[in-house]
Image (cartoon, rainbow, N blue to C red; front, side, top):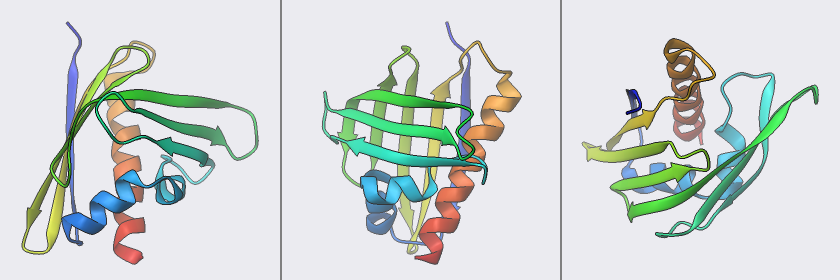
Length: 137
């Protein structure tokens, strides 16, 4: 059984805007990276059960890159997304709408390559980028 990590963040935006920026590829490429020396030059999203998600993650200096790929298991518009990453790990994302704000709650399986702390820091950094991008657009 894999360990799970839970993280959350509050976004000062209605759930409709949060959902759009979370799921539309032209927005995903603007926030989907943990640090400023990385980028997401490409994203594809077939947001339906059985549909595929792809985000290309690259170091800006070209030294490293990888494709983050997943298949959707559950999609409830404005509420929930569940997917399985290509390596078999599962991710669940809940979107809670309250008083013109949105809370994103994520639970994801850990991998064996990086420490749990490093994984949590990386996913939290991406959520902070998303928050900043969404609140400023």
